[in-house]
Image 1: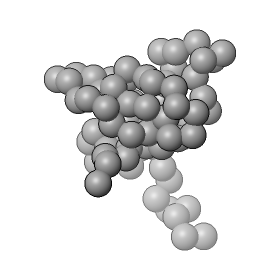
Image 2: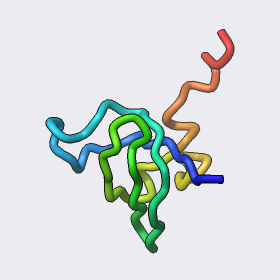
Image 3: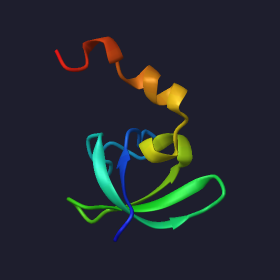
Image 4: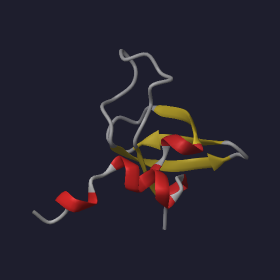
Length: 73
């Protein structure tokens, strides 16, 4: 099975290249502080920091991204 992740931030790329977040990507390679991914929908490759990919984020940071109180309403 392929490792599929969700990108939540790609602000280090020019808006003319970067696609709107969030989007799903296939993991190509994981480095110490970065991850190389390929977008499932566009085929573009991105070299992102771990904090830009949902699956690499701490649970506290994920909680800050979403308003848990609104979940399910």
